[in-house]
Length: 228
Image (tube, rainbow, N blue to C red):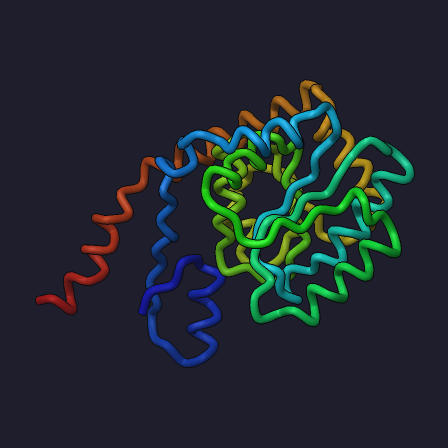
């Protein structure tokens, strides 16, 4: 039995699986290094503060909490900002419509839902982002966090599921959804300070550690008993 994080492995144990092994998900870093979409770069790299989250639109992602935190941030700290959500809403249209209504209620013109997009556009959004904000309450691994760190985007995330494990002492975690405090931390991470630089350095070390793993060999090792 294989799980992509210790968090998921523990869930398998609770379901009765014996000794599940952990093999992190593969990330294609070459895709992250391909050219960014120029149109997106021109439109969003305009001096405004860009708050980004990447992930499909699903209730466990708590996108409504992203909107709430952004609303506090834009009303009390940085008015010239926008929230960008990248991810498909296929199959969760009622939840998506609820989010659209919530965005209209608070800050419609500053919230952008892109839907599913090609890699070049995704790379552009990462390059335009000032921070990556994650409010999800259940993640088995969360590849977009790895992608954000690879693009040197500071990560601010709710410490739920496998998020702390994926960050591995990098980024900034919070244990309580105090939106005023979250907005303040968003500000500290968006301005060019020594604190922001230190967070990015920590994330770079995390990426180096992740890239050093020979996941192909680890998979072979896990499968060896079955093959033999």
